[in-house]
Image 1 (cartoon, helix red, strand yellow):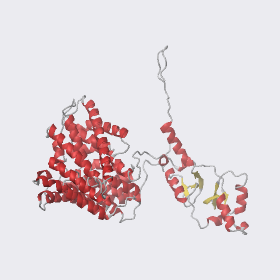
Image 2 (image 1 turned 60 degrees about the vertical axis):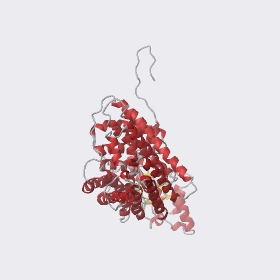
Image 3 (image 1 turned 180 degrees about the horizontal axis):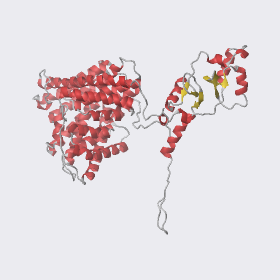
Image 4 (image 1 turned 90 degrees about the horizontal axis):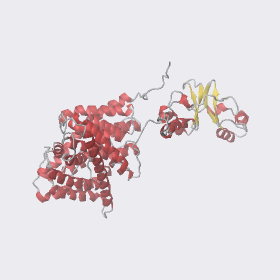
Length: 593
């Protein structure tokens, strides 16, 4: 039994090695950018809260400013508002929606301003107490660097997208040390496809960043944890935790955009909004100093159940309010770290209530479930939680609870926290994707093989009379010269030729109509998607299929109507309901139908 040699599992791409090599270099650059960003956060934290020029990692919770701490986030918000107004408005927000917008609607082109101002503004905001993480800014910064490097080479928009995403995912890897989760984030949120041409360079960039990270940040998990093996009762607890985490994700998303709407109604320019958001951050920081800044130490304490229930609740309520108001004001910051903290806080509460398993597993489980439901990226959240803790015993509860939370969120939320921001700018993003029916089928499967041809030596008026008269059978015909196709002829083309050369009708042969044109043809081993694109680019209704571009021996014709055939088969698969077996019942009983 023979197989068609032109049919492959994946499309061949000769440019893949070169793009992958560029992605590896971008992985190194993004790791350095992550180091710069974290250093800026440390620098501004020391400057704002301790009055020293130092890169030491210190928590703003240890400040001795007293009530003056309220003004520190206001100052940071004011600076960032000015930077956004007079530098680049793209630095506003938490980074990932802006990266998605550039990918889908901006041909993956980002400006040098973003690459410089985004880490600087985020360093100022977080360093002045903003309740954000570094992941959103580094995703935006790494993506901008990847895009800028790509713009220095002759690449397509699709290849530029790959390099942008490679920079973004590599930056996330450098911050958290979770390369596999970063790759999944790219697949679930940024690439909008599953192809070796994009997946492999992004994965390579993350691998390079993961190895390079060890030299700058050390190795090992960010929040090492080891919980007990879950028991059977844990399944019910996972369902409860997943539902509550999904509800938390929906509530946080709704509160964020409601707050953003309220800021939009203020009678002041948006440049001043971050300062007003900073006032809420300052008040929250005065009440709960540990709610200021990134809060990785708080996440670690929550995961290890080191905080009393009342203290955890108070801290998390303040953190949630600070985060919603600050991000709703349009300042620069990320969402992952705050979501990790808020989800872990829910888990601390549930650890006192849920039956089965180790109580310490629920902060981790709720952390991942809340993140997955909020982002609409459950696989990323599951692997991310494992990468942060290296707790293999928690994988099964993570899987169950996160998928329940994601299912809940997809039912009650029209959009995720990432896509809602883009939708408010007039763009709709459809997150589901599958194999295109036109990609699955080849030209030789749908083409018409029985074709009537016309010799190129025929004259225009003869062709009109013989093929386009009252007995016309087809809308267009391939024209043959020396055994090869030179083009397709239709009535419009013939009538235009006659009108342009009136008085010389008899001398006009079909060959003269094509002698200066390169024929647009299809090959039998090309996908229907490639041909549909070619028809659209050239404005054609049909195209001749040839054995190769040199001899152009005719094999058939593909028209737009032929390209509908794969879609009909796909429709049957999706919507036609069939039953091949019936359930047999005992005699005398009704048959189940």
